[in-house]
Image 1 (cartoon, rainbow over the protein chains, first blue to last red):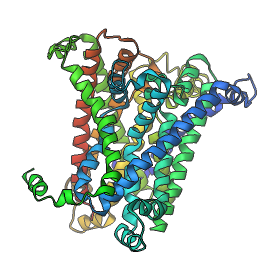
Image 2: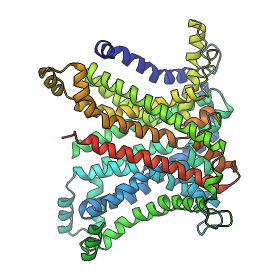
Image 3: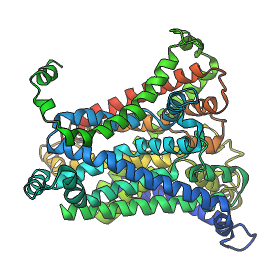
Image 4: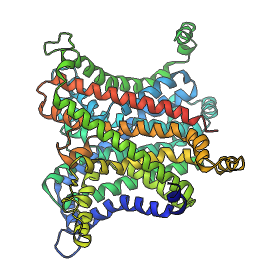
Length: 260
Length: 296
């Protein structure tokens, strides 16, 4: 152990790099190999020309945007007031925010199907609009830990108390303060959480599948069952989305630190 | 508890809630209760009643079938194995990157990659490993044609326990690395030099300084990785179908097609999952508090 750690950190690093990069390399290679003997982009072409791809991608995009908007609306004012003068609520908030870690998506959606079934007071699971609303709620729940953490960190870097007093003296009503003073100041943090949420929603499979929603995640799974090269192309695309979203999150986080 | 009640009695807490504060915080709490707590409570209730709605514990007896027991064992094995291996490799990599290589650039690149890899799970990850180590995967073919090693003839199968474990490590190791790296950074060179000046050997340094600082983080990583693998389904589903019958896959099959022929049993299964994950996550949170004592 000592010998290995002292003398060959690069060897260990190389082995790890191989393990993590080989799957990406192999998938990329496979996605280009739809034609025997030559590399081509035909698998990607086939994916992009599939109307179901556009439909499911567009659907998940809308769900992601709505999740981000909804999540921001319920988290920002709450987190602001908890920081401003409702500190005693912090413990309750932290417990709720931890819940998605102990209630996995499969259990959450099972609960939705029981609670909002056709025989319930609010039969959301019965209509496609209702099911989409449930999907948004599920995605909001999944992203709540990230969203709350980034927004609360953003609030920590600005002087909530002083900004509120200043806005108050200038005659701003509480919600104008949130909208016009607090929100613009923590926008980079909100965006950081939004990009992470975006990555989570675009990759979500279990909830969409059990609510039979035509989401990108379920589409990728379906293509995987029926085709050979297209799934590889979709995997590269998914990785690019995750990579892009997390890169944007990092940019935003750096930006919010500089602003703070 | 009595403090809270006394506080509420003299109402400085409730006084701090005026109209705007209520309007700002209510949506979050309503959402959390209706969309997070109530669905779980609905399953809790379902687990304790029979089909006619009468209170019973029979579901917990009926769930004890070999099928469910096997699924629990499979879940525990895959979560346990990938938690242990993920933490071990995460620790080795954190020591390698954080201390051995001593390059800030490499460290930054590794941590960025960890962020992406820990979120790259689910179905695309399964596809990536099929393209790598599946029967027609690149590595499988290269090993066979160039090196003469046929891993499938040697007993490896991606759609089996070992294949699934290997795939899980793709996100388990980065998560472990993300948790352990800050702790490694805390093991500053000063502590090591101080120990050396006092005449400590390397073994003594790790025994009396290094491990006492690291162990809460290592145990915390084990608990978090265990919970993470226990709740996940998409990767296993895409990779093995139902070949490796873990609890979430059994539950998925039950919700889709009533495999257990009884919704109540599904609810019991869901509750047991939540129970296991609550224990694991609570352990993780407790250990994190413990680990952060070393943070200044």
